[in-house]
Length: 366
Image (tube, rainbow, N blue to C red):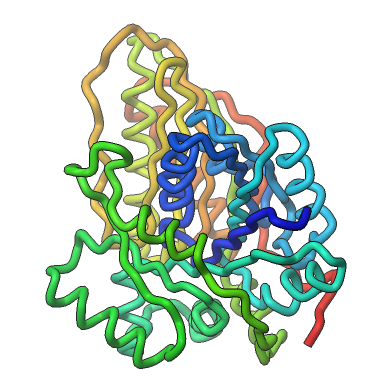
């Protein structure tokens, strides 16, 4: 990082709305003539979020096959590329949703290298999941809950998303509960807002103002039990696959929405806890991202067929609390059944299903 540059680390559990918030923030800053870049991150290497950001004309780079802390030099290189290629003086770095311990493994090493000034950690937290955690009623394994708790513990700012699901009174109680549990943190809310002409998302302007004005401060490294941390990551299975849906009826685009719904329905039917299920449709005109972030989500709306569409490319990212073999089996079975049920065919690209390995940071300064 060059002195004077802004680096906003955005952490938070899988499906919390990190990419949505970053996209809205980047759009707003770019409208003001500010050069912005985004670094995405995942344990896999086929990222829906990177494709989505690029489709929105937001400069993006990525760190793949492991979290930021285990790929520290790749993160620094990605930030440098964004600064050099698009003069990004504000960079959002979105860590994979199973990551924590950013102060010790990212901020302090950057400070030690002389380029870590103006770094702020925002932890994005889904209002429903946050409520469950605070009330000790989360359905995820306790090791996964441990990661979420550690993320919140090291936040500078806690950004509560999906506020539209709560009444103003219920949201106020939640924010106060968060403030009581995590004193000294800045806590605010954001969520969809159809009345917001600029982004369709409220709370982003206030978040950006807080980021820009955030006071510099010494941070303490977390006390992290890395065995628990590793167990939490290993409790989740990853599945990535890119496919092409082909339809003689020229409705491959509509079928892709239905396929996303089918995969989600199969996971929900088995009562598996979903970190996120994301599908990216490579529409020629307007690319689409479909996201399911927990088993209580509703099915996505399936649009009516428009122009003839004989084929549709679709990228699938699934992060679910189960074994890789189980997750892979469920999705492959859904794909096979879907072809029969809808008289279509699917071309399969390389698939990858795995559990994250033990976290081994490049640097850790306590």
